[in-house]
Amino acid sequence: MGKIILRLDRVMADRKMSLNELSARVGVSNVNLSKIKTGKISAIRFSTLEAICEVLDCQPGDILEYQKDEE
Image (cartoon, rainbow, N blue to C red; front, side, top):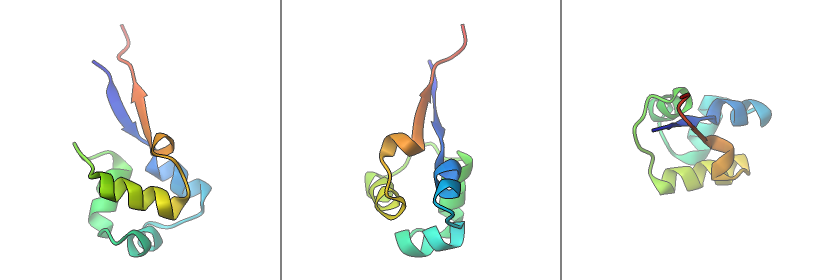
């Protein structure tokens, strides 16, 4: 089975937005956003994903990527 890769860091860099700014605009703590950014989470609420996409003006597919296992 493959895995989901989080690309929040890439989208934030493209938008030149800091973790602190994103945290303030989304209303999610720095700690939680940092975990999302580094991929140290096992789930994300749709409401959080929607808020991130709204602030970053992106699609969920810009942040989430499916990677198949190498066989």
